[in-house]
Length: 81
Image (cartoon, rainbow, N blue to C red):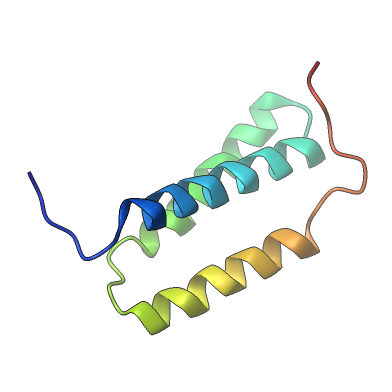
């Protein structure tokens, strides 16, 4: 088992942020073939920050990601029923 300095709550938060970012991109781009390219870019951005271990740097990165998500939030998101 690998030991990391981050809690399970932190991992859940990052996964939630990733999923919310993907869902927001899908709200803006209905065609899955176009959305897939955006999803790959989002994944690459998350992967770039994967090895950041400084808590202060992580706080800045996550705050910026939340702000970007809020700025790009779709005004009428798609809701599955």
